[in-house]
Length: 309
Image 1 (spheres, helix red, strand yellow):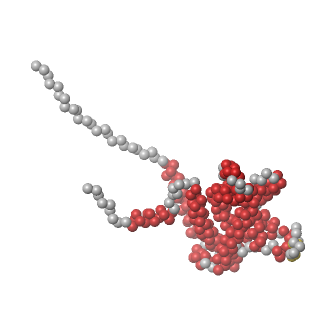
Image 2 (cartoon, rainbow, N blue to C red; image 1 turned 60 degrees about the vertical axis):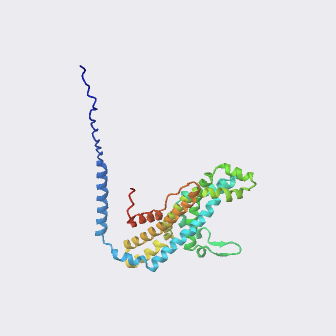
Image 3 (cartoon, one colour; image 1 turned 90 degrees about the vertical axis):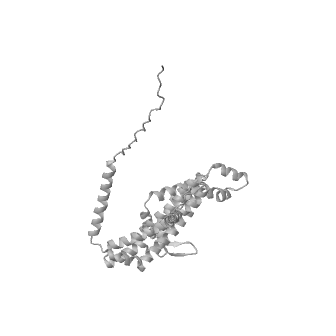
């Protein structure tokens, strides 16, 4: 008589579900509480300060403030154009094999980058102490009449910016492979044609981002023209505060206008960088406006997807 073996498989016991216990980050909570505390204390301090916040909206559209904002934008654009044009020339001179031109360019960049903008503005403002009379042969006048606050601000800001733009342009030119220059010369292009048609268009991808940053910085640096009596935003705000005694209020008004200007040109800079990035990136990321439209379409759609049967 044989014993029968029970071949029924033993019931399988399901594995116990893993319980993940997150690591506690006490430092994050402490840092968050400290940051919120500081923000609340600063807000309380400003709310209890003797500041008449109700007059700020009225002064934002005041004619004097609007004139100052326009002069700030106007001098910033002109100084940036002057700095960019002169910066390209200085960059080419710096990379030249001619020792005289390269040395002159190096000295210019060294001097204007090494001295404060405010000092340069004051030197131009008092240039009549060195050259009392401007005599060009076909034009002669007193330097005090020639060196107006506008011209002083333009030269002081533009010539200083040229030193920085020269280094930016030089970095962009050096980012282009040397084979591009050799191929252009093999096709019979001159040095100038190679620079204009081949090198600079490819270097723009490197030049544009820091140039945009320099212009945004120029919008704020132009406030130093207040020292030479140029009627930019800070000068106009100070003129109003001297009669209305709303000193801090006018600082808030000027700050709001600077934020508006820098925000607008930051958006412009983003789209310019996006345009020049097409040569190096196949699939560009969606713009903020495209992402907003996509999210609006998703939130605006109330139809549920059909379930496949």
